[in-house]
Image (tube, rainbow over all chains, first blue to last red):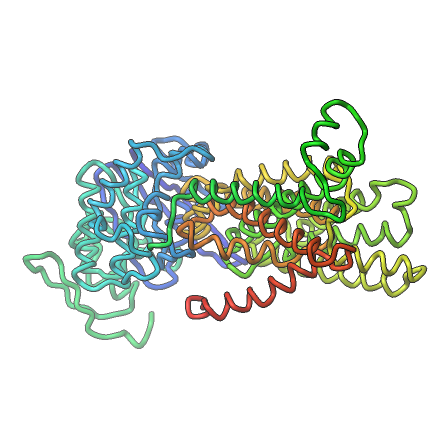
Length: 260
Length: 333
């Protein structure tokens, strides 16, 4: 499946949040969405997920307008992981993962055995099987996020859209989370992941989409996007970029005081 | 969590408790009554004092306790789920007070002496107007905070108008009638009250129960609920209308009965593993139990009907709620 956004513009309270944003995502592909704070990444990914509607422009899913699909149909194809990963009630981890089956359920029907198997698999995949009976609000950040990712997998979506999933995690859990998304893409799915960690972005993503001030500036391989010039222009930093055995390494050196 | 039990087992237990309480409620009253005689007489089509007392006095009262309690419990659970806040209650959206205002207006003008259904009818009219007002004030696509603030505003206006009606009560008798009605009671209600309110209440229940899955999804926030295939603004409207219909109709026949919608979901939530959707039906059962219990207490403690049901629920509910807050304040932010 391909997800394709054309000329997306969006205003909130008179302020241009996005203008003329473009993106296309193919099966098996993982795109890292990067850019400074306030670049419009979260707004863009919500529009891609069909949560918010843009003022102009359209999102297409396999050449069909995204909003032609019913919310239920869409929810089976695209799964969205919100920023901050809040949960409002102290559910058990298993009950939380079960929420991922909601798009497949009718208003009153119970979960079938088939659904239970999918939930078990999703929990095994995200390595939260042992946490099944723990209360979500008592978990650490990394455990909680893995539970929420198991919830994503339980939906069995083709496309995953994740908003800053690894921002609050230690390196071990960052790696683990990125591996889970990579695995999903290697199995034929696709993902757009909003990231601030440029090293992780360079290492796991096929392409990077660099955004700034509501515009999609560069969309290319990590190597072509993460250049000294681009980092200067967008992040206003001087950085040294090294090729390491693990991938590209971006070391921010200093801020540019005189912003262009 | 050890205290979690399967929802259907909890529901069966609650239903059995209701059955026991219904049996007790039908058997108490100022007149000792042999139930079998009453049922037999009614079956044979004989009009006897026994069947009259059972079917025209005690049965409507008991049914109303179940219906009103169920509505308040379910509406409380629904609102707490919608707002993701355990301190919300059905009174919050302003519907109860508007329903009360309608009834007070009926009492003010003594309309109930012209048409018997004046009080519940005006009560439901008041509830309906409050919903329209809330939506007009807040707009259909507004945030939940705006919706609640609109509800609070409507609530305040209704309260002030009730005070105004009390202030200018035409005579002390009308005033005491209004005050007593506001306190909330199920005595002296007839089967006609039940049949008048029940259709609205059932529609309200269905609308609320249809949103169970949405409330589950809302655990993850509004954006994620949307991404799980729920049209958030539609479901929100569905819930608010459902709550307004059910609570409005319930308050129209019973008067204000506080704390049921607040306390019952609180008590049952941990037993159900905090699942907001499952809580709806169980809270309805729990609310029915609480109101039945309170009404039985009223009848046993003051057979001459001086003590009002709403006073009992508030007397028990208030301190109990305080206790709950103290107990859970560490987990509340």
